[in-house]
Image (tube, rainbow, N blue to C red; front, top):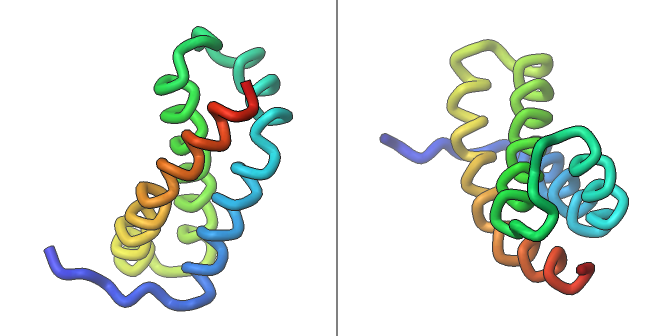
Length: 97
């Protein structure tokens, strides 16, 4: 699969969403754990759930802003940015516990 050049607008949106999630993890963690059947001591499950939430938000944003073909390609690139944030997110989550 070929890499797609992600427009700066989308890259910025993805990075802002991820940064917001990381900064406010304590608030989101309480909200998520109240809504989902997740063991609060299972850090990997909580991180996976949080990153999934970011990806769902990205998918909705891209579907609203771009046609289907472009949004699919952009979503794949956005996923790479989110994946690169896993380490930062995990570290922030561990510190908040």
